[in-house]
Amino acid sequence: MTDNAQDILKQLELLEKADDFPPLLAAFEGALPAEASARTDALLQAGEILNAKGQYADAQRLLEMALQSAQKLASHSRQALALGLMADIHRAQGNFRSALSKLVEARERLDTTPQQDKEVSARLYIWSGLNNMSLGDYETARQHFYEAYQVYHKLDDHRGIAISSNRLGTIATMNAQYGEAEKYLQESLRIAKELGDRHAMAGALLNLGEIKRLQDNPQEARPLYYESSALFASLGMHRGMCIAENNLGHIHAKMQDFSTAKYHYARAVECAKIADLVPDMLDTLAGLVYIFIARQEYEPAVFCVAYILRHPAHLQETEQFLEPAQQVVSRHAQFQGHLPPSEQLPQVVEEMISKIF
Image (cartoon, rainbow, N blue to C red; front, top):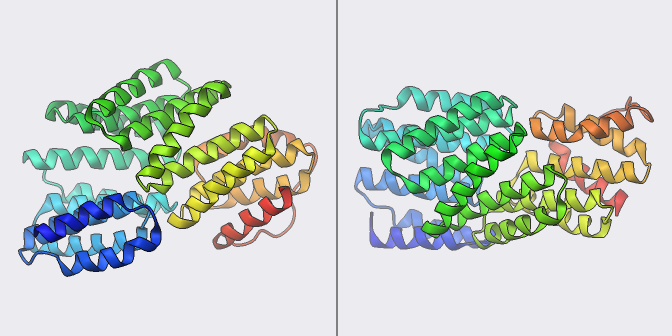
């Protein structure tokens, strides 16, 4: 890879504002190396960075270029990596079936004999686990995360161990196994601090906050979410920030501190719009349901519940979050009207926020 292309990749990692990406990305494409393997690796790195930043359209485009280049090289590991990263993009946008198809194709192309391919294999386990988790298949997700955890230990890859232990902590949290969850998350946080890996630190703090929130301990959850959100913001990673802000909104809504809830939900919506995070917009909408219920406004509450549950991109965890609300609203109202199409989600969220605040 040319020094210029490498320098631009480093600059891309530091960007936070969406408007700053196009000129730097154009410069990167102009500086791509001519040599095929170096060009493919550069495209893969750029696609991964843009995926993490929520710049999904450009990430998808560069990864498709990387896949074509990897096919010409007959490099199975690079093909699998490109497909796995594309799957992660589809998952983040709520296209879980498309993500699964990409992951199956990636696994089929992967040759697991070389050492390099073992690392790619571990990453595919992580992405597969995340997709299964989004679909509510927590046991399969746990198995995939543990496979990754074992591979990373064999490779002595500390960053990989931090990521996979974080994911194991996440799935244990969702299964209400809080002791096991905290063990894995503290391991992840410790390693991340040793490595100075702010991304892994932010993820561990986010999930430790989730444990405290689910244990109905908002005073301990809030500082963990705040620190996580700040770290994600410093990295320009809108999805992590969106999750933290949504959960801060949920906490304050439950405490009936609606002005603070509005602030955090507004920040979450802003991040979700920037990165087109459909499942996270639905999570914001789920939080608004509880505010409507607290105000005994059952008609908009039952509308929101119906819209979320019929939207194809809603997460299993959002459905579980809504279960207490469903029990309340079903005693007061039944939705019988017409639901807007799923593509109108941003407008629906804005309309419901304006109704409340």
